[in-house]
Amino acid sequence: MNKELIGYDENGQVFDVGKVVLRKINNSYKQEVKEIFKAYKIWNLNKKGIVETKLLDDGNLQHKKLIVSYPYEWTANMFKDAVLFHLKMFSEAGKAGLTLKDALPNNIVFDCTTPVFIDFLSIVFPNKLKNEKWLNTERFKDPRVAIVDTMLLPYIIFPFLSMYSGEYGVARELLSIRSCNTGGKTPEWDDLFSPKIKQEIIKKGKYIRLFTLVEKLRLYRLLLRQNLIGFDKFTAKLVRMVSDSDVTPPRSAYSLYYNRKKEETSFRSPSKFLPKQKTVYDIIKIKKPKNVLDIGANTGWYSVLASRLGSEVIAIEDDESCVDILYKRAKKNRLNILPLKISFGELTKKIYGVEDNNPVYKNRGFKNNPLYRSGIERFKSELVLVLGLAHHLVLGQGYSIDKMFKILSQLTQSTLVLEFVDLTDEKIVNEPSFFKNINKFNHSNYSLDRFLEIGKKHFANVVICDSYPQTRKILVFNK
Image 1 (cartoon, rainbow, N blue to C red):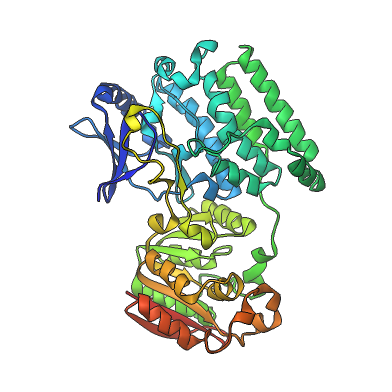
Image 2: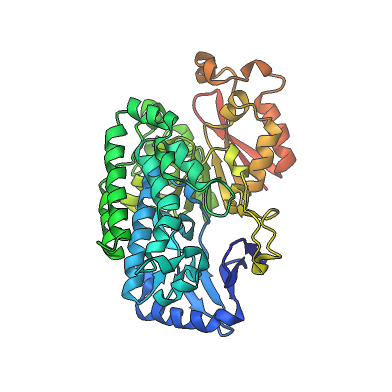
């Protein structure tokens, strides 16, 4: 396999080698890594949230492999937890005589609902910060202060404050195409109060509280730069500020989807499951997939079902409220679910980095190899669930049935469980405004037979199972 995961660190490269991640260290930096790893082991930093790591005999590092997700895909409260985790990581590293040389949310991935710090080479001894030329540490008594303006504020705190103001789209823009090394404009104070955003947050009644928080942050920063508070006190104040800030999205109509359909059924009594639930339950029980991808998960009834049956679940959902509800539910109950705010269309999304003049990066090919890889590459699963979604993709968003199946086949390692909804279904007949492309379809180009015909181009066989009502069927495609 030996697939490089693109990164900008001057001291090493990261490779996906199958079941683990290999970090190849430059020979000139191996002794430094050996000393850092020694502190990592003595202080049990793996139990503090730094990725499980082994120092190999050749001086390279081997890390536990986790599912890669990106900050712009996290739910609002997921991002909040990541911010708190990153801030507290400065303190945990400090106890071991170490620090972080940068502050990027990209240094974190989630092991289901638990944040994990994965960028081992961002951990350094404090006296080495002066070697990082881009930090301009000579201006400050404590070199860590240089990290605040350069990375902590623009790449972590500003997106968080955007979420706090209810501007989730702005936050996701800052975390994606304007994140570090993408070539986008570095986030600034003005991004929090652009005329358009200011108008929106005034309308939402959040302007005063955001303004108060920003002014408090400016004061903390001023005191820090004047050496009137230390770096540790500054980060402690940020921890309190973030902890006290509610970023929970307002409830959407879709967040009540299962309640309205009377499908918020207890998991304790499978005998009382509705036909669709019973069918999916039986499929998972028989297939016993190690991992499941639930596309269009809503608040996650089927994700929770799969988790309770022993599968590791990636649950993707485009609705801010629904996916955040699922995250809090999974976190509270310690479920093996990774909830991510992703639409079906975003599964093919890639973001590329910018070229760097440093000779170390000469052959990295940042313009050809994505800095942020597509979901198709990252989320391949043994079993893929697509329930109550396919008709929205085709009749609503205008996907061709073939294109939809092509994407789903790339994500599916073994079994695709897809719900077909007929044109005569009451939800389609009674709510045609939800389906902007419905006039392009009739029973000749949108039917059960058409789905089976096209699906068989991408899968070896298919079994038709019951759903509810009769206008719906569960199609089980196998490779």
